[in-house]
Every structure is written in C-alpha cells, then in structure tokens.
Length: 173
Image (cartoon, rainbow, N blue to C red; front, side, top):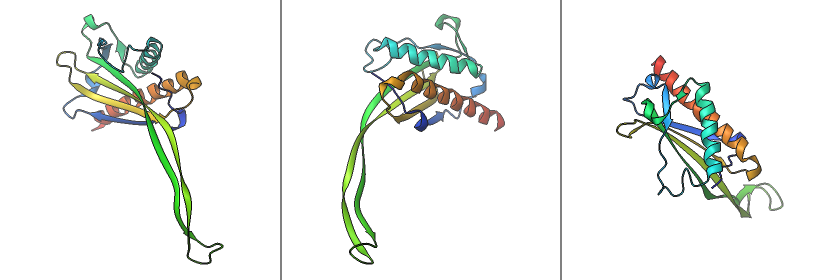
C-alpha cells in the first residue's frame, strides 16, 4: 500500500473528545499491530517504518516523548493508511456569447478524470480502555510514488501541527 499525498494539497482535519484535557498527554507508545488488520499498518514494513518514523520526529518536535508500552505511556498511537479511486467531472452545459448570438446555450462533452486519494488517519487512544480522544486525518490527491517519502513527511508534519493547535486552543479556552 502506498500513501503518496500531493504536498501542496494535503487537507488535515481533527476531532477531539470534549472531555479530554490534551495538555496532560506527554508520553506515547505505538499500539501493538493486529495481524488481522487488512489493509493497515504492518502489511508493508517499508511504509510502516516511513509513517512511524515521520510521526515520531514530528511528535518529538511538539514536545511528545515516545516510551515503550511497558513504561505506562499517557496514550497509544494507532494509524490507518488507504488509497481510494475517485472521479471528477468538468464540462457540460454552458451559456454565453458566441457563434450562436447572445444567450446562446452550448454543450461541451464533460471530461471525467479518475484520480486516487490517499488518506492517513492517526488516533490517540487511552491505554486502558482503548477509547480514542484525538483523531487526525490527512488526505490529498495521490502523486506519483517517487514522492512517497516527502509526501508522508508533509502529512506527518501537518498532523502533529494540528494536534499542537488543538492542544493550544484548549489551553486558551
């Protein structure tokens, strides 16, 4: 599975459990990978290392510390990566001035283009009950796979920045 997101058009969104105080979370560990996850983390070890490594780096930059699962982390991190085929259409009915005179109505055949959208979802979950308290998603049009590493870096950077923004918003509120 590949997740090459186009760098300039990565859309990031987040959801926060309103009962959660994000500023209390400082240490994390990666949740164990289930072997029955399809598709998901662990199925492509190169992609898995790339995603985890980039998220680790960005989390460190915003003050989060990775610990081992047996060191009682404040939260666990889980991610999901996918690619979906999408269609876009343009063209069709148009109005304007031209050969047919004022108010002329013309028709151009619509152009349907198929593209792929890559999505990376990151959940922060409580170690005890495994309920998530923060979810971030980064999605964008798939670029060619030669930009895979760079695009995952951008997605990881924007997801960490979004968590930090949510945490900062909470401190101000």
